[in-house]
Amino acid sequence: MEPKTIAHFRTGIGNFVLFTPALQAMASMDASGKIDLCTDPIWTDYRKNSLLSLWECLPFINRVLSIKEIDESKYTTWFWTAWTSANTSRELFHKKHYYDPPDWNQNVEHECDYYMRIARTFYGYKGPTPQQMIIPSTNPVINKEGKKLVVLCDGGFGDIKVFKKWPGYSHFVTELKNFYPASSVVKIGYGEELKNVDADYDYVGKLSMAETAKVISQADIVVSTDSGCMHIADAMNIPLIVLWGGSSMSKNKPIQTICKIIHLGLACQDMCQIDGSYRVCDSYSCITDITIGEVMFYIRNFFNKGNFNVNS
Image 1 (spheres, rainbow, N blue to C red):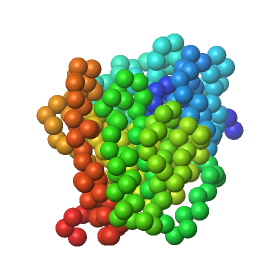
Image 2: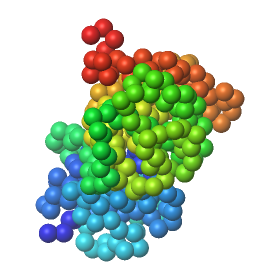
Image 3: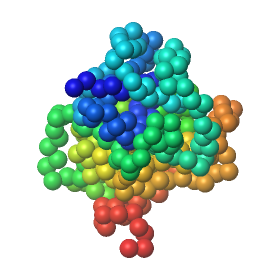
């Protein structure tokens, strides 16, 4: 049975992870139990190709189409949001299912909840909120040899990456190896991320996103900035230490896994992405002032006790 529901998506990797509960909700209302997913041929940056491998693994996605491939007669439900749709695709989906996008206070409502609110309010979903879902590839398999596997990510796309880059990773690895010689460090990401960081396994720029998810799935802990890989770890319930810069924590924070968010609580911090003030910041101290000692404190806490509760 072919789906009668089609959804549109065109934005980031982390955004897609947070979109998966709403997509599952929409799929559950289709007689096929699945949806088709539409994206744009004009969307050409690396995130799209990265996401294709993840989409192929998800059981609630039937197939992925370009907008030019859509047979409009096949679909009765057209799922879109103002945050995940753009340009001519948004115009088509808006025409097929008209509604005025609701206000979204990103310093109050989590992105996952925003998508679910749309599924409930404008498409009639009445069930519980599904869990985020990411299915990893089968490879690569890492031989941990009894060691703690620590996965590092320093991701960030476009101009907002300026407040998602932590300069302490290289020295952190040195400290980690001093305290835990029986640990293995893995680095993941894209381009030249973490290029000056020594690691036992270097997968930066070498894997599909589904393969990257497989690496994350084997981690004892992931140390990351607010990135797509952080959200993938969250979806797969892999423990996280998150080095939080200028993103809105209410909008983007992990919601499923055990995690410790290191957030300096600066007055400007949660608004700088929303109001654009990061463009004139000259220090990005929200991320650069996070100390190696604080990260190591929570690493030791987790490895010794299995949680981040300093009082347990």
